[in-house]
Image 1 (cartoon, rainbow, N blue to C red):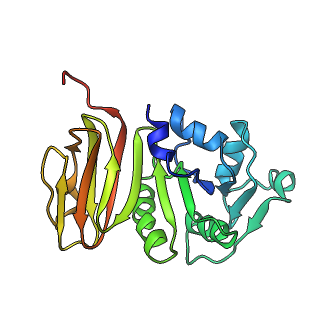
Image 2 (cartoon, one colour):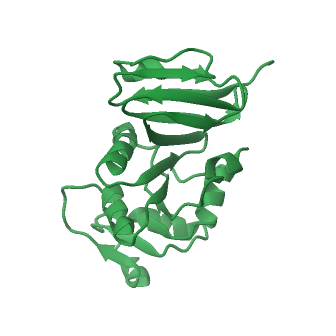
Amino acid sequence: MHFEQLTKDTAFDAVVVANGDFPTAQIPLAIASQARYLCCCDLAGMTALGHGLMPQAIVGDGDSLPKAFLPAVEEIFHHVTEQDDNDLTKATRFVKGLGKKHIAYLGATGKREDHTLANIALMVTYYRDLGLQPVMITDYGWFVVAEGDATFDAFPRQQVSIFNISCKHLQSRGLKWDIYPFKELWQGTLNEAEGDHFDIDADGIYIVYLTFEAKSGKL
């Protein structure tokens, strides 16, 4: 496991838990339990409490929370009635208002596939429009938004996927297959790190997905 690789630069300012599949793997559970500030989206608050976690805030429109549960969390429940944004964005705006910028997202994948796709896409919005540093963590790896030239810590046979958002120039060093300015989201998937880091040269925004484990098989 490479928990240090994920959090080596700085601990997350806040952890936001969405109401997708609650994490079961060691790394996301450790991030949740060690959160400086834990914020949950509506029903995810009840799920977190059921796993022994105490959120500092539960944010949302409350439509998925059982009425019998609300009195128990009234001191930490922040009711947001507007329907222009989903609960993940409501929670994000809430923690941003507290001065949190480096945010980990858990439970944002699984269950409905359309929600999963939307939540991954929202990472770009949070980075570009809200000025945040969002990282979405699953049981298998993590998504991070990057812009311009960047170096990523890695390990041999770590699986890497790159999703081009706005790059017209996109190159790499240290990946098994050279990258280019992909026009389709699938084109940058299923790449592989060859050593302890890889470099990306770019002129725009892109999403990088990295796995916690190396690809199985002989080196």
